Length: 195
Image 1: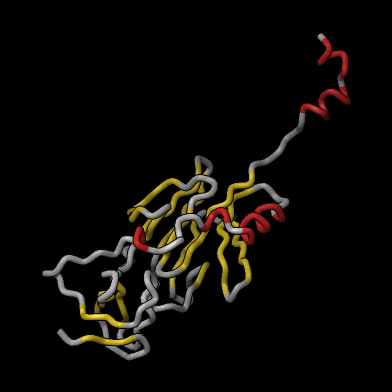
Image 2 (image 1 turned 180 degrees about the vertical axis):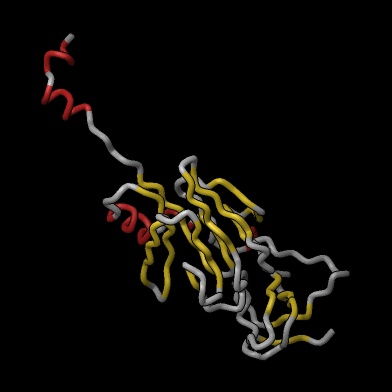
């Protein structure tokens, strides 16, 4: 089977890393990237008749990313209550507030969160923000959407969940509204607390 290396225009199709079996899907004019899982550069064209593994559970040191210092710093800096997607881009943290009902993630120019990357489908994922919670849906992507290492079709999100879209890691942060504190109640009505 003919192998292809990162940086070459291999054409439309799905390619499997020869080292870790990670599957990358490309559109016609895309060059093969380094493997998002292991960083290697040799691929073979994937076949429907061979076993293909695309789960990111082989990603080294990726599932403990929620404890990274940059993420804790971003979380501490969020003053407004709400739900956010937080990720790094060119070494800088990016915070995207989930204020609309639908947030599109993909490579398309119409995406709300856009990654110009061949491992990301043009329409990769949708994040739905409704009064009863936030959900992520796979928008028929080729490489799949993963939440906390598990490939999903749709999943309700909880604070601290990690989404993997192509080679990009996004973190769901839920900052609850604080309506009052016990100290404030004691100051205003000390006799009510004493009884």
